[in-house]
Length: 344
Image (tube, rainbow, N blue to C red; front, side, top):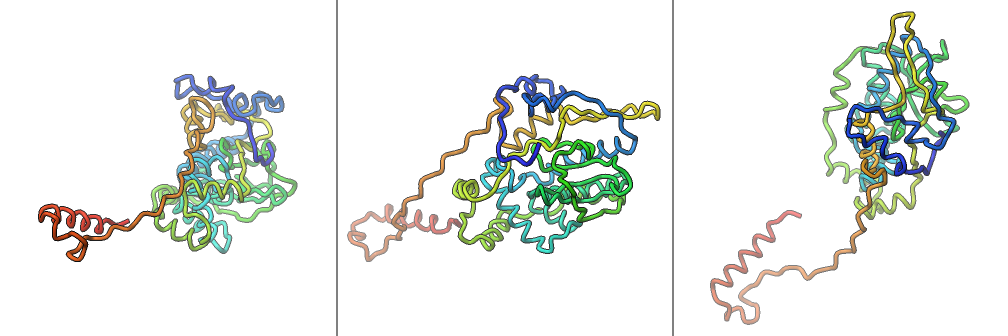
C-alpha cells in the first residue's frame, strides 16, 4: 500500500487474533486488507540466500520494535498511545544526529532515546542485520519521491533478488524487493554496511544506556520552547499541526509466502503473517485494544489547575495567634514545615 494517513480499524476481523492460542497464525491479508483482492494467497520459491535474509530481517524488525519501544514520531497511533512522547523523543533524536549520517552512532543515539521515524528505524534495523550471523551486504535506501527510508539486504547492483526489511509500518514484515510497495521509482542508496559478526552491538542497542525522562524533557524544551512539555496538551498540538501517518504495512501483496528450494535441501518457509502473540503485541504497541480491534480511548484533556493562595507560615505577628492553644500552634507549624520540604 502507498503512504497512508488513514486506515480502517480491525473490528470486523477480531476473531482472527482472539483464538486464545498464542501460536496460532494470524493471516495479515485477512486482517489488514480484508476487502482488497490484490492481496491473495501465492507461494514463491526463493534461494537459500533470500530465505536467510528473510529470516534474519524479520528477527531484526522485532528487535527494532523492542529497542525503539516508544514507537515512531510520525505514526499517528504511536503518537496517541504515548501521548506524544514518541514525537517528543523523535524531535530530540534528529537534533542529536545533526550530521544526518546513517551509521552505528546514529543507531546508538536512536536506541538511547527509544523512538524514531523511518530514518531511525532503518539505521537500527541495518545495524542489527549487518552485525548478525547473516553475513550479507546491508544498505539503507531512501525513496525520495515517496518520502521513505528502509533497509535492503543483498546488493541490487548485482542481482534483483534482494530482500527489503522495513520496521516502520505498524505490522511490517520482510519481503522481496519486488513485493515492496514503498520502493519508489529510483531509490537512492545513502549508506552501505560491511557485514561483520558483532553480537555485542545488538546487546548494546537493546540494553545500553537510555536517556532519562528529565533529559528528554530538557532537550525538547530547548528545541521547542513554545510547545507544551508533554501530556494531552502536547498531543493535541501534534495531532493538529504535524503530518502523521497510519501505515499498517508496506506490501503490494500480503498473501505472498516464500518457501526454500527443496532441490537444495532448504525446506524452510517464511511469510508476512504473525503468530497471535506477535500480532496482539503489535496491536498494543499501536494503541489498539486486541479484544475489540478498536483504538483505546483517549483520556480527557484536564482543565487548567486554578491558581491557589500560597501557604504562609503562621507567626507571632498574626492576628489572634496569641489566643491559639500551644499544642495547636505546634501542630500547624510542623505541617507547614513538612509541606515546604516537599520537592516538586
